[in-house]
Amino acid sequence: MATSRFVDSADDYEKPHYYQNNNVQINAKSKDELKNQIFGDNHDRNTEKFLSKLENAIEFNGNDLFQKFPPKFHDKNKLLLYNTVMEKHKYVPSKDRSVLMTRWLTFSLPNTYDGNVPLKVTYKPDIFTYGQTRDQSTIEWYLNFANYDLFSYYSKRLLAQDELQVLECFQLASIREYLCSCNYSFSSRISENGQNPTPILISNVERILNMDTTNIYGNKFTTATEKQILDAYNYLNTPQIVNILAIEAPRSGQDSYEISEINYILSTCYTGFMAAKLLASKTHQLNVMKSRRSSSAGSSLKTIIHTGWFGCGAYGGNRTLMLILQIIASRLAQINEIVFHTLTDDFKQEIIDADSCVKELTKPNGIDIQQLIEHLQQKNFKWNVSDGT
Image (cartoon, rainbow, N blue to C red; front, side):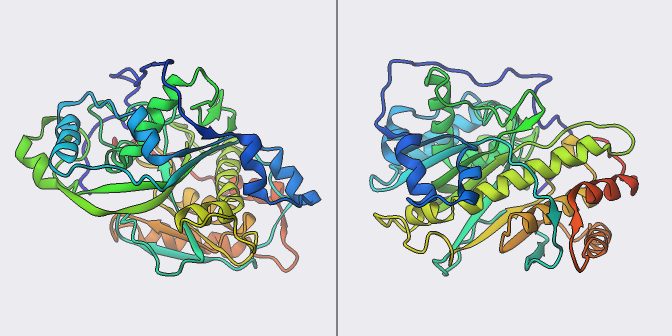
């Protein structure tokens, strides 16, 4: 993926996408209907503490969502792609698939980190490909490196990771249109006042475009010719079914990381990853189009998190520290595998340093989570400067 100089969040030069049409109604399942489908009928003490953190949930028919809240792209090149897909390829979302959206309040971190908890850590020098495993017992999640207001710049001229996901998955644009029209019954905020992370997870959307962004990423997108845009897309006649985990990292810190910043990043990742784990059974049901929740209640299902340079690039995060904290969060949430898509092979030293630090934190009886955070703070990880990607 090519890089170019621009501000990832677009806050400095564009207004976010807001469009209200409060007259549109859509049939949907609510949180009260969905909580037992997510957690099962028998809530033990451990389940209850997470159930109370399910702030909101809604499930739509994916076709109904798209028809009633169609995307409203503003950028000319995004409109070109949208119109091409609708007119040439006659895209219609499946009438049989449902889309689930959940929002979670911040989970308390466990008291102890156990570095011996099994976790497969994989590094791939590529971008998200959304390739689907043939193992139907596996649920895969792809991070959305979100702005604090979910998908708020999708229609504009920006094409960063967030906007690219929406461009490839039109139903995510429909999610934004719904959020702008629902009279605040479902919050679009990924964090509360920048203090408490509130991840939003979206299960079972259709990915219908595969974009080659080599020559159109960043500011290059809005200045690209029609030919460049049309040459860059590949329409997927059989959509890929993907699950999206949206979280936002802190941005533009200075000097060394403070304890509060490390704690916030770890809490953000842990809450998002744990929510993905809790949604395993319900999401599996949606992905494979089963009519009922898995009787195994998720116990035999595997969860994989696909991520990358979360909070780095435009936000100026430290690459080594962000690897470390995502690995720790994965173990705390008992995720089966975390896959880091590192774009290129240029970051081998960061990976070596992160793996070495994680090994240091592996103790026979675990390590107190606050001691762990203090240990990382004492390593004096430095904020980087935004690279504009």
